[in-house]
Image (cartoon, rainbow, N blue to C red; front, top):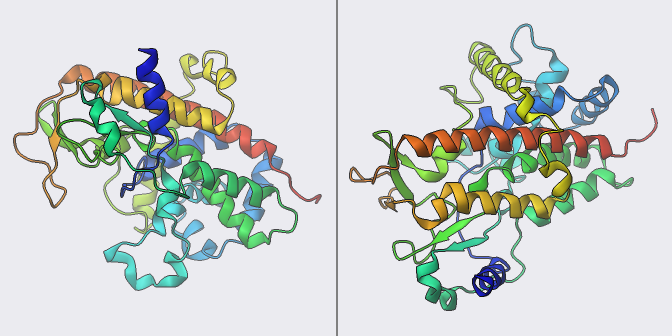
Length: 335
C-alpha cells in the first residue's frame, strides 16, 4: 500500500492535459459566497463592495438584475463568485467579444491529480508531464498576490477578488481535483466529464451531477430579476441549512487540520477517490462523442446519491468558512 501511495503521489505531480466543466453550478458558487458573506463584519462587506465597484463588468454583470428586497452590496458580492464562469468562451455568448472573454482562464478552475484504478497501475507509464501547466494552485497564489499588492490597480484587485471567491468554491468540488484512469478511461475521464452513469434511474455525466448537488434553478445568470429572485431564495435556504450544528466551526476539524490551499486540493482529491469514484468501484462507461450519456449507463443506486449529497453540503460549508477567513486576511488601504 505504501508503494502504491508513493506512486500515486508521484503521478499527482504530473499535469495531464484535459478540458473541464465548471465546478459547482451558479447556485452552488453563490451558496458558498452567501455562507461566507453571513460571517463578515459590516466593515469588511463595505470594503469588498467598494473594491468591486472598480470591476470592468460591474454595471454589466455584478450589479445587474438585483432582485427586489436584496441589498445591492450583498448581490454584488454573491455575483462576484460566478463571474469567472460568465466570462468563459461559449458559443451562445461570443457576441460579447474579447472585452469579456479576454479575462477567461479555463485552466485556472481545476488541477489534474490522477486517481488510477489499482488494477491498472501499468497506465503510469503512459502519463506524460505537461511542463509549466497552469492550474488552480497557481491561480490562487497569483490572485492572492494581486489582492495584497499595494501597487495593483483597483480594477485588477476587483478582478482578482472575483477569482478568489470562485477558486475557493472550485477547489471544494471534489471532481475538480481528480481525474480517474481505468481500463475504460485509459486517457482519463477528465474530472468525470467523460464518465457516464445512472443514479436512481436518471442518466448523468458524473462531473455535472456533482456540480448540481447543492441545487439548481432553471434559466441563465443573465435572466431578468424575477428569475434572480427565485435563485436568491434558494441560495438563502441552502445557506441557512449550512448553519446546522454539524457544519459549525467547532465540528469541522478540517479547518485546523488543513489550513493551506494545497491541503484543500489534497482533501478534495481524497474525497473524489473515496466517495466520487468509490475507491475505483463505481461503475460507469464513457459518454458519447457529443458528450451525451448513453442509454445503457450503469446504475449507481440511491446510496450513492445520499452519500454524495451529504458530502457536497459539508464541502460547501467548509468552503464558506475558508472563504470568510481568507477575505478577513486581505490587506486594504486605510479609509
